[in-house]
Length: 484
Ligand SMILES: NC(=O)C1=CN([C@@H]2O[C@H](COP(=O)(O)OP(=O)(O)OC[C@H]3O[C@@H](n4cnc5c(N)ncnc54)[C@H](O)[C@@H]3O)[C@@H](O)[C@H]2O)C=CC1
Ligand SMILES: O=C(O)/C=C/C=C(\O)C(=O)O
Image (tube, rainbow, N blue to C red; front, side, top):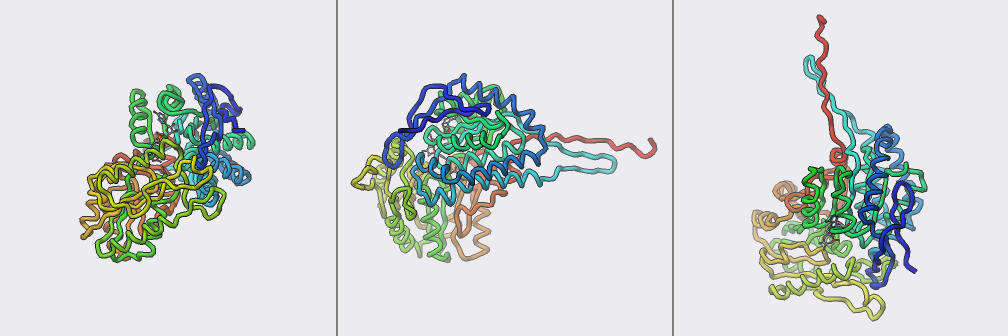
C-alpha cells in the first residue's frame, strides 16, 4: 500500500486537501498518495511561520546553530529511512543516495551552523565616526525545490534560512515528497520550535507553489529549478518586490585540450554527463575536444556510456537511473529524435533499454553520445536534463572558449588540461558561475554557488547564503569630540 503524505504545519501533521499519486520511476507503479495544499492550507503554513519567526529570531545565533547540529544528528540517526524514502521517489542508486544525497543533508546543516556561529560582525572606524552593521532575518521564506536532488537541495536552503533567524515554508517537488516528510518528522522528534519549519506539498503553477510564493505573508523566495519557472515566479512576486534567490537551469560545456590526461578527462566526463542520469543542473551537455584527440575521446566516452549499469536501485553497482517521470522521459527522448532530425551521429545510445521485467514500465532512457551537430542546433542550445551530451572538435583555445560561452546559460563548466597557465586563463574566460578544472562537482560548501545569464540570480553557499537570508542595517555613530 502506498504511503499517505501529509503537510507539516506548526509542528503537527495536517492531512488536508485533495490527494494525488506519485509514481516509482523504476516501474511506473504508484508510490504514495500526497495531500495537495490549497490556498487555505498554504495560508495556515505561512501564519504558523509568521507566528514562530520572532521567537526563533530572538534566539542567539549559537542556539540556532545548535538546532542545526541536532537536525544533522537526527538525519544520521534515521539515515537508512531517508535513503529508502529518496530511492522510492527517484529510483536513484543506493550507492549514490548513501554517498551523496543524504550525507549532504547532514553536511548542509552542520556547515551552516559553523559558518553562522563563527561569522564576525562588520565595523568601520573613521577618525571620529564608528559604523557597524547588524543583520536581521528576512522573516518568512518560501523554499521551492525540484525533484533531481530532493533532500540535498532542500537542506541546502533550509539550513542557512533557519540559522539566519527566518521561519520557512518548504514545498518539495510533487514528484519527490518523501524525504521532506521524514525531515518534518525529525523536526517534531527533536522538538524544533513549532512553526519554524513548515512543509506543504502540491504542484507548482496554479497550485501550492504559486500560492506560496505569491502569498503576502511570504517575505522572500528561494527556488531551484527550470529557468522558465524562475521567470514565472519572478513575475508573480514582482509587485511586492520580494528578494529572490534562483539557482536555475544550464547547458554546461566541457573543454578537453589535447594536453589533458585523457584517462582523467574521459572518466571525469562520464561522471559529469551521466551522474544522476544527467539530471543535475551542473551536468555537462556540450563537450568540445581539441581535434588531435577528438576521435579517441569520443570513442572512449561512447564505450564507457555503453558500460553504465542499469541495475536496480538496491544493487550497489548500479550506475544508471531512470528519469523522474514519464513526462520527463518523453522530453529527453524527444531530444533524441530531434538530434536524428538535425542530422546527428549517435556514437552511443539514442533509445530505451529493454529489461523483460517490471522495469519496462519505468522511465529509463539509454545514455547517449552525439556528434556532428552545429553549435546552433536546438540540441546544443536547449537544456535536456538527461544522460546525453554532444561532442564537437575545436582547433584553438580561443575557439573553444567562444564555443563554450555561446549559450544563454552560464551555470557550470569543466576544463581538462595539464597546463596550469591554460587552466587559469581559460577558467577566467568562461561565462559561468562555477568552473571545475580536471575534476567535476567537487564541492566546498563555503564557496559562492550559482550561475549567470538564464542560470540564475544570486549565489548560495557560505556567507553568500547568510547574506541572502538576512538584511544588514548600517549604524553610524558620531563619537563624542574630546572637548565635550
Ligand atoms: N536544478 C535544476 O536546474 C532543475 C531543472 N529542471 C528542469 O526543469 C524541467 C521541468 O521540470 P520540473 O519539475 O517541472 O521543474 P520546475 O522547475 O518547473 O519545478 C521545480 C519546483 O518548482 C515548483 N514550481 C513549478 N512551477 C511553479 C510556479 N509557477 N510557482 C511556484 N513553484 C513552482 C514545482 O512544483 C517544483 O517544486 C526539467 O525537464 C529540467 O529541464 C528540473 C529539475 C531541477
Ligand atoms: O551541490 C549542490 O549544492 C547543488 C547541486 C545541484 C544543483 O544545484 C541542481 O541540480 O540544481
